[in-house]
Image 1 (cartoon, rainbow, N blue to C red):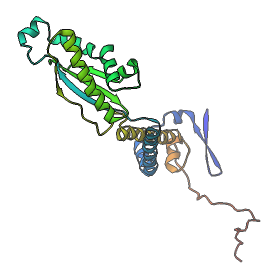
Image 2 (cartoon, rainbow, N blue to C red; image 1 turned 30 degrees about the horizontal axis):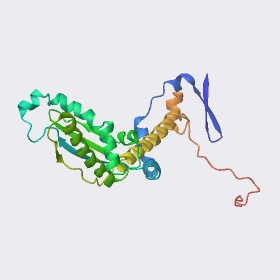
Image 3 (spheres, one colour; image 1 turned 60 degrees about the vertical axis):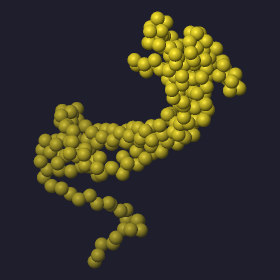
Image 4 (tube, rainbow, N blue to C red; image 1 turned 60 degrees about the horizontal axis):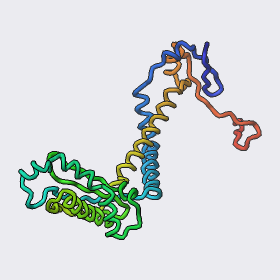
Length: 253
């Protein structure tokens, strides 16, 4: 079965077996992409600005602030810590204690917050850095000042609760939270750049697909490529105008 290709007003039949054996011209594809570089750049800019606009309009920035407390009291010796199991295991226990209902409800009451335990709990992360007796309390909020205030309040409430439950000296706050200057999410530049890159790759993919799928005969080289034969002659293509056309030229006498 043959495929038909049209050049001007002439149709050329290309054998199916020759078409199946067509190889991708990587050099030609490269020059095609270079020729269409403005389209690729435009696609990147559209993707970049599109993602940036969506993030600015529909996504609320979130800020994080962290404070840290040392779970052992000032007068607690190493031996006491071992005897009371105030080591790494207890630090893990304190991680759970820091997000308990009494601690979070105390923060809600002290700061007169109009929120619930569940909602505030979802914005709090408590970590125990490896091989330490330190609790790192991180709070996220759309308001950077509120994030810092909540983190410091959580550190104080946690220290008081640990001292009350374990009957030890109140743990010390070794680092207070500071007001964050930039949101941790979304990352506008990074996310927008990814959006632009995806758009550019999509444009490259479409251009490449069109190039690979285009098997029309355009010149003498294509005739040899698809038909495996040589051309006898080349005829320039001219636009034929109707006799009634305004641009119809009369033959010179």
